[in-house]
Image (tube, rainbow, N blue to C red; front, top):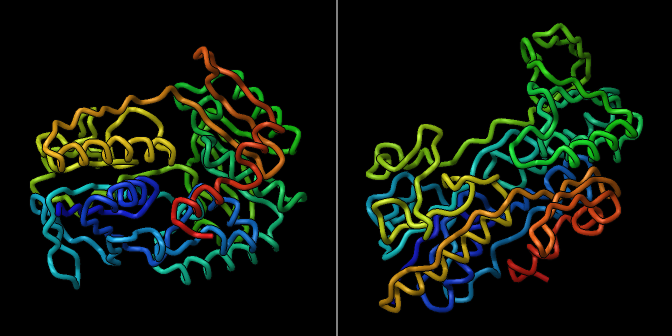
Length: 365
C-alpha cells in the first residue's frame, strides 16, 4: 500500500489526510498537540468561551492512518525526518505547514495549554484597557476590531493602515470598503490611513502598558495595548538546505504547478499558505487545493496520470465585525460581484465562525 506523508495538520493538511485515509497508509505529522481553528482565533481573543472552542483533538481524524506529533527537521526526496522519531519513508509527500502570523490571529506555541494561558492573560489585559491600537487595516485587523468593539463597547480603538485605504489587497471592491468603513464609523473606530508608524510601541502585542506613538505623517496615537495585524510568513524553514530550496521563492513560498505538484517533484505536493498560488491565503482555498491533491495522488496510486488542476478563485471575503456586523464580497451565479451587509454576513459566518464545519471534518461530535 502506498504511503503518504502529510506535513502539517491545518485546514489543507487534515483535508488531504482524511481524503486519502481510505486508500493509502497516511501519516500526518503535526507540531501542535491539537488542531487550532484559526478562523475563530480572533473571537477567542475576546471571549473566554471561545478560548476552548478553537482547540480540537486530532484523535478521530484518521481511521487507518496515524498522527505523529513532532517537528520535521528536513525532507530528503520523499523521506521525512522528524526530531525524536525514525525517518518516515513515503511514496508521496504533501507540504501543508501553512504560515506564521502575529498573536492573537495565530499561536506560536505547540502546546494548547500554553496558548490558552496566553489568551487568559490577554482577556485580563483587555478587561483593564481603555484604548487599543490595531496596526494593519486588512481583513485581520478589521475583524479583530469588530471583535474588540463588540466585547468591550467602551474601548477606544484606532486602526493604523500604511496604505491610502483599508482593505488594500487588489480584488476588494470600493463598495466593500465603503460598507466596512461606514460600520467602523458607527462603532466609533478611528481610522488613520496613508502613513506607517514611525516606530512601534515598546511592549509586546497584547501586553498592558500605556504608550504614545506617531505615524511618519505626524499623527499621534495613544493606547494601552496594541496588536500587529500584518506579517504572514510561509512555514518552510525546514526545507532550507534541502533539495527543495531550489523551488522556494525569496518570500519562502513554494513553486507549484496547477496540479499542486511541487515543481520538478512529481510525487510531492503542496497546499495552502506556503504555495505561490496567486490568491489570498484562505482556509477554503487550502481545502479546495487539498481536493485537487487527493484526486491526483489517487490517480497516481492507480497508475494513472494526475490531471486534476486547481483554478484560483476570484477574490471574495466574508468579513464579520463581531457576531452581528460585517460585510461580504461574493460572486453570484452569473459571476457578478455582490456585497452583502451585516445581517447576511452574520448568518454566513458571524455567529458560528465555521466551528461546526471543522468539527465535522475532524469527526468530532
